Length: 414
Image 1 (cartoon, helix red, strand yellow):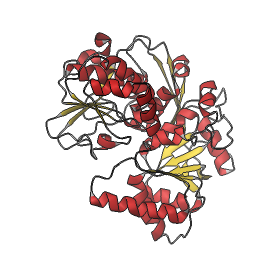
Image 2 (spheres, helix red, strand yellow):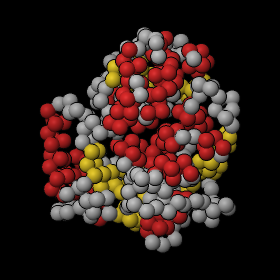
Image 3 (cartoon, one colour):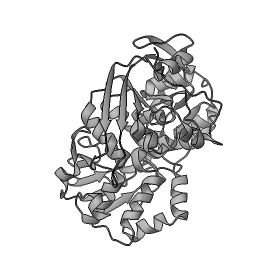
Image 4 (cartoon, helix red, strand yellow):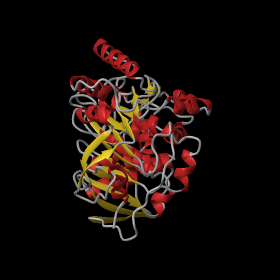
């Protein structure tokens, strides 16, 4: 019997779609940011197509290199802006609006049952809302711009069940890193992943976005949390159009199943240079850090900044600490609540909403021999600067480590 992914793709292609079928599916929304839209637009022009399939279904946020850090970046962004204007694309979010994977849900494009394609690997974030969301290359996105359709193979689905109450000082990011460690960086290659269990149900929408965001780090095509009342509440007054929640049949065909109990989970840290190179905090505590980065599409939401501010309140950081809110709305809310003042008084640097140091673009690149503890999703060699070392953690661990100047257990600091 069908899984969530099979049901969504069945609707999108207009015929029954089961695992391993090849289908041509109608895309509900397509997204490309400043980094990938440049190549998508180039390919679109080379195809000789004059107009996009639907200017209201295309979303283009500028987030990766904003504000532009070189003349070349400024020129490419200007060219893309001109193309956006020529095509009449209405959903354009210019520099400073925020990270694409925060902007898309905030503006109501991520909805249950939808097929959402992004020219970015972490587009699987939108699965937190019960959508089938995945990333493609820029040339594939050009084809979507032209036709509104995508050719793909229907993935088999893995079911992951998570039970237990997360202990104090342990959050969705720790659970996510732990799952990736157990499944492996290639353990879910071209699989859809569905998440179930009381732990998943108890997660906030922010926590679910963190979980689904990192599905690609174990090779998954998409990660999906079945929609519930939390999902519907988030979408009230926000959803762009009507949507129909989709659920797997009780006897759905899963190719594999994992069961986890996180009731006694300790904070987790991924050591260089693989995301599944994960250890409990007790194994890495005391590792010196030069920089702490708090933000990204994984952990730059209000909920993340709030917990960081609680840990840093009234104290001073010992490592340079860079904080990038995931969007302008997050920054405004954090400013109005006093969180930004707390972070500034603690010695943190507040950078404009965007991706910044996560991809090694600017606003926090590290040099050879430096170590950064990051709340982002990747710690690949050279990602934030040639020769640098990247450790991945939760916002709680990042804040505690910023205070100590070394990787620290947030449970000790709190």
